[in-house]
Length: 103
Image (cartoon, rainbow, N blue to C red; front, side, top):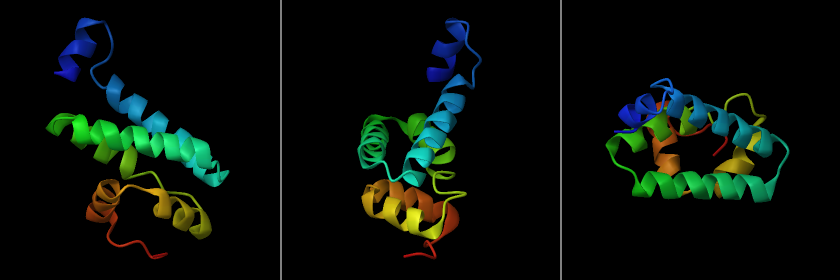
C-alpha cells in the first residue's frame, strides 16, 4: 500500500526505504554523540510505528532501520544504545546479527 501511495504521488517506490535508512543514520549519529534525547525519541518513534504497522511496515523498519543501526559504532556506544532499545527492536536485531558481543 505504501509503495502504491508513493508512486501515485510521483515518488520512487523505494522512497520509504530511503527515508528509513536516512533516519537510521541520523539515529546512529545521535548514538555516537550520546544524544540521549534524540536517541530516545527516534527509538520510541520507530517502536510505535513498528507496533502500529502491518507486515510491510514492520519488514521495512527491520531491514532499513534496525539491522544497520549499530554498525560502525564503538562497543561502548553500542552498549549504551542497546540499553535504550525497546525489546521488540532488539529481537529484530538479534534475528539478523545474533546476540550482540557487547552484551
